[in-house]
Image (cartoon, rainbow, N blue to C red):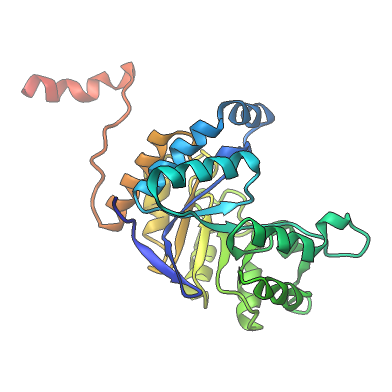
Length: 284
């Protein structure tokens, strides 16, 4: 069993590639039709097969919130490989009084603990609602990180707002890592890619980048070449895939880029590309 390059976050060894879950659970960022397709396709067996490929190559970190289908698939893949998945959970919870009782922070963090989370990082919709750019603070964040620590989990912040990283660093928020959007297309990013590149480079904690392929809008070689060559050695890339072949492909491409090699993967073929190989065939 091989091992993907690793980094340390809060004293925990993590693979620098993280398994994303949007393409397991039906969050395509494309259309409702695509969401429905993903949900109809991704069975327990199909998801387990993908996770198995990642684990066999030393990619042992997963981000998201495991619904029962995903929990079962994780268990199957762990049994096959003998390797444990390190969970980075991104829960949502009440930030104002009067919300559903089951969404009270204490109950949500108890659930994350029961699920076996190593990292607990308030989801973007929580973090960014707490961000106060007028006063340069993240409201109540110390209360939530304390609750996370008390349950033996490591706190971080998931955000789509680049200011969250800057303000958290400046105010010494008790977190060990950040989730930050980062892709060459600028997809869902609030400022240009070069600004996010600088924010990641200057972050005081390791950064878990997400949506490197802009939810399918970028080709894997283009997307992965950009992110791996513009983040630091302590930073990570979260990648979602739909099939085992896609998982193997992004792993192989990533290892090539990390080792400064031009990928030599087999390219897709179509009739319109036949002329690109005609000269090579004639030469033989």
